[in-house]
Figure 1 (cartoon, rainbow, N blue to C red):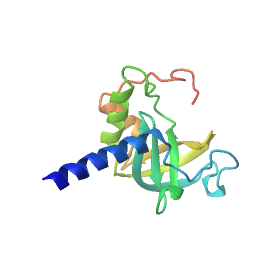
Figure 2: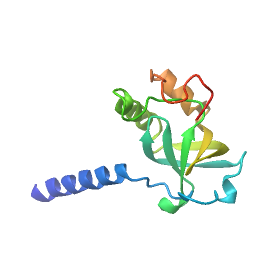
Figure 3: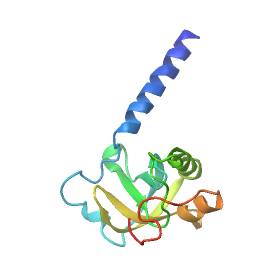
Figure 4: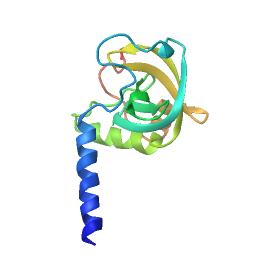
Length: 145
């Protein structure tokens, strides 16, 4: 029993630490975006990390060096530090975590790409709205990301 409890505590600490840092490393913090992430590129893979209510990582290969951070183009979640931010993150985790996402890249934004992503036949933004998630983050209604 102590071993199981110890493993649970270790897992919780590891998860809490990982949540503070950006684990998606396919796009460098500084410098050019990899050429395979050009405008119109299709990338797909399992969703392996959710940063907030409208950002996630898609694994296009093994390990964090191949995790592409994506800002959803069609959904503006409340900011993580806002009162409804944690619920928005939980909603995206419920909709997308571990599922295969197919994304079409639009552009680069800092160390991530802005893209429209689908799970099955529906966009993740539509899935979030259907699940009752409320929009309202930075840029909502302004056409910005």
